[in-house]
Image 1: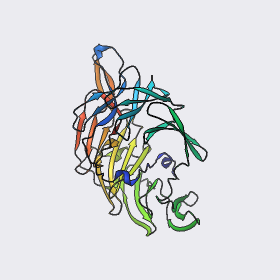
Image 2: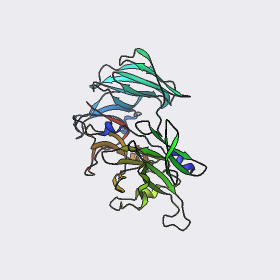
Image 3: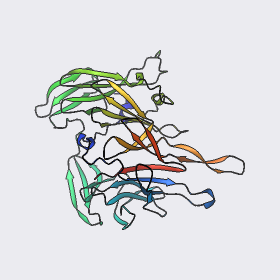
Image 4: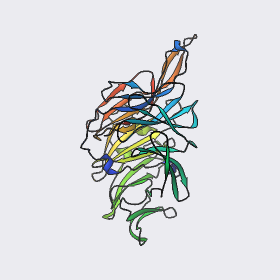
Length: 377
């Protein structure tokens, strides 16, 4: 298997979470973490803090202040509180904090043990994930007031199994082929002539897979890698496939796939209503920062649609719009005595409509957006 693919991952999200909700207010507030740079004359260091804002860019409210960096905001299920990670001087581990939606009642929940720890809301509780320990994942549960409640043990999710757990897709590294196996009997019930990795189950019978195509020394892509997206399953071997590089994206200011190749680092996917959202990310552009691109793939049609060159951040309640942040870029901050400028990293906060492709900047200027969470009631 190509070593490049070891860096590529898919992060499936339950299809139900992306189905159109009865409560479909795209104007629900967004909680986001950002650094707003202080004026050069202030001679003070800027920090990441938590803010809320609506999708039109109005009603901005700052919830946290101080000398710490506050990142990774997450709305509570009831929409009354926001949990986030607080660190000092960019040093991890940090502290999980909670503040209410108006910036009041800030309280400490628990210190994290390592930079690998993650947290999420589980009903009214905060679940702190301490990472994998062999066959189990060990979580600690805390109330929103910081009281330890207990432990939550469960087996790690099996990404290669179908949603109903009946089948799994396995890769044979020796022959570079793939097979669908019935979990209970371990009987092979289907196969692919080549191995697809990463992959994502579209339903209980079909899989979306991605693979790197062989590079020809005389190809027209200048030696850059080409990626094939393929749908396959128990109804046949290869149902439909499309090469991403061959899709027409000439309407974009620049070709996002010009960055693919040895610098390509990460690929994620989310199930949509009739297809899959595919996002790529390039972390190796040392001069311009990260590069991002988001596409919508309808595998049953073999159709690929370019959406934007921004980092996906969070879905709105109606699952049609989402907030995003473009690739960070350098901006002039302060003129030096020799006439040159001190530069800082910046990126705005956007709202993207996936149905129309419309992109609206709701926060611009000298700021750097880290992450966001859209309130869902």
